[in-house]
Length: 344
Image 1 (cartoon, rainbow, N blue to C red):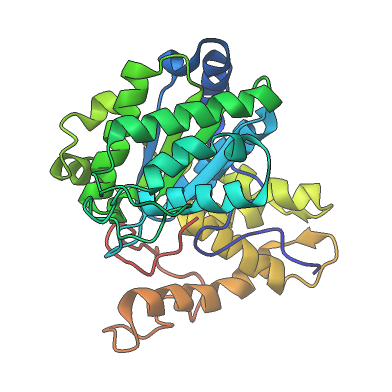
Image 2: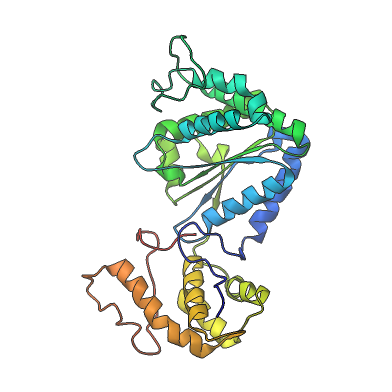
């Protein structure tokens, strides 16, 4: 079979993002409203759910829709043990200011005011100044950061009449409390002080992200953000679509029984749909059909791979115990707890 149309593994966006039509529709409508009215119509969203359900892929789709409309997207990621969100944002500004004469360069003064303060006092580390300064260090504050983002969004709209600024943060639960508190406060200052600014925010996080935000000092995260739960599994029709449609677009058909078996053994869990479908694709001799036999042939190896990830090499069960003969017993994995579960 030709190159696979499936995307197993962490962070990869599937060719067909099944089961997210309503979320993407609402996002597109909100983009229209913010374009017309500004920040007063913004609905900052955090996609919340266990690993492997498509949070990052959905946020990437948000960014793609925004980019099509003329938005500038700044994509950040929380990392355990590192203070990096605001630092990364200022480093991005420094790089863009140096590289172009567009909106970032025209907002240079606002970002210079930010990066010349002593941000190590705020817990972010130093070394971000875009110019030499002898001013005494002061604390980076949400108001000044909101002002810079609003100015940048305004400059973007000078070049792209329907554009604006979208900031995304992946893995919010891994960010430091100081970073999260400053991001939340900045969004609040945008709401209060820059109601016409076309600035949006989207993030992702594990199910306990709301509690992480509260511990960071964000007293009512459910008021500042739409906390959008992403379900663990897809509806059967959406799961079948996720399996069949990428192949159909490539001129390959699935026997209905073969697609049904993939949906059944994966329980509609998006990460496993991609993994099992990719294995069946690789097992099929091709060139234009995937059969029930192809799926049955591929399942033992990929099922054993998942058991090794979950149980480890010293697990109590044999790695192939459920999959060495057909049919296997129902396979389940606790994607809430297993850090090795695939994620998209």
